Length: 128
Image: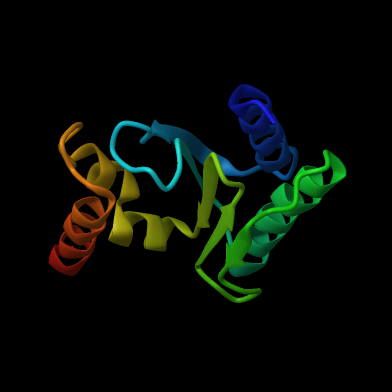
């Protein structure tokens, strides 16, 4: 599936259930793991779970099997791995704590291997 189509699918799934503060980060030059991250907030753990589940259901309906889902029904952060796009759905408190937007924007845009990129990411999380 083309990345623009996949992005639209995920955005529609999030907007359908009223996700808040949706943003995207193009990380294609920063990591080989994924090209785009979508980050959205939910109002409760139940809302976070429902948003993530809706992304999964819409992906499956379009013929795409998500690579994985991390987090659970009572989690403050659920990650849906769609391959070229990773969707992070978080409570506002978790989003503030982990601050993925700042974390990824602080990475150098070139010259890191996958291992170096991950090590830099881990260090930034420890510092937060």
